[in-house]
Image (cartoon, rainbow, N blue to C red; front, top):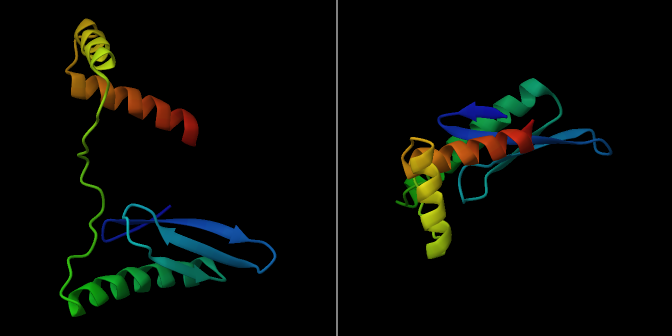
Length: 111
């Protein structure tokens, strides 16, 4: 993962073309970049983010911001109640309990 101005780039390698491809993953808009070396890739990533921000400014549009850390979660009422009770039993707020559960799941999947 690469970081620049709050934007996160994820990189894959195309062995056939011998090129590194990247995409900004923490926004909904599509911003991509590529390079044939790590230095070239880092420069392309930063230039792509800067170009994206400049393009938005020229169009008088608000750029998509990296995730804020807030989202709405809809549950069926029974799961909501069970989650609340589990959080209470753990001595946590529902928000902290859900954040811990998500952290555990994402750590397992990305490890």
